[in-house]
Amino acid sequence: MPALSGGRKPGKREHRMQGTAVAYAALMIASSVCSVCGNVLLLSVLLLNRGLQTETWLLTVSFSLCDLALGLSTIPFAAHNSLFQPVGYASASALCQGSAFLFLLLQLASVHSLAWATIDKFAEICFALSYASAFTAPRTRVILAAVWLYALLNAALPLLGFGSYTYSGSRFLCAPSFKPATTAFNMLFMVVGIIVPILAMCAMYGYIVYVARNQVRRGTFVCNENHCFYVPASNYFRSSIVMVTTIGKPGGKRGQITGQGCFIGAV
Image 1 (cartoon, rainbow, N blue to C red):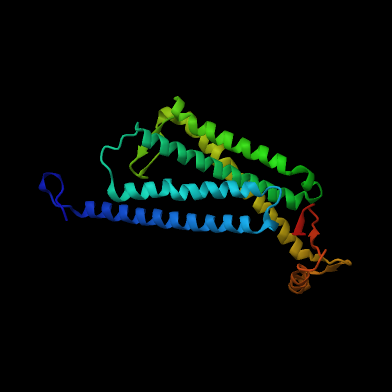
Image 2: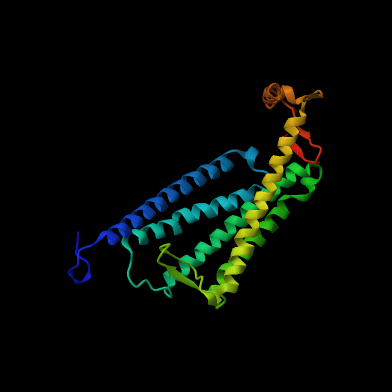
């Protein structure tokens, strides 16, 4: 083990810091590998299966590409800095400012694309009758353009003087500064860009689960190409088997309209 400055050997505190840095780097590398593999798999499934390419599938492609780019750029950058711990990292350098800009751009675009994909699924389930006319391919492209424009403008604000990017020694990457002088920018991107979309997604998925749970208690309707019939909750397991067996039949449909006005099922 090389001696530290002044000839002093590393003590217990230095060993703990080195162990923490190695653990952080290992976690970042594992996160990067999982992000890359998972999103490559998702994109492959979407691109190879034309049946999944719906009117709004570009929303899924958007957040998947963002997460893939984060796994290939920002996360390995943090792992490298954690292992080698560069001294005197220049926060004002083009590399630091550019990596922080890319990090915030991809993060905001990913969260808001995922939020709109959740809104899409919520509308498809809870407003089934008007969903087809509300979410069309042109409107999806407009939503996607607005999401990326919002992310681009927010990520560019620190470069224009509103907020700032700096190197974080605790996270080993360049990111928005959380100093008191940048409170307004931090509130803007944290509350509007992160917290509100996540809370909205949790609320929508929570309501979907609530409606589905109540529907299971009441029973369900099973439909095929000829007719629909009611299956009580006591026979729900057998109804699930029936629904599975009717999925592949031409013209077969399954699902149910709940008392709360939501449609649970798929064509």
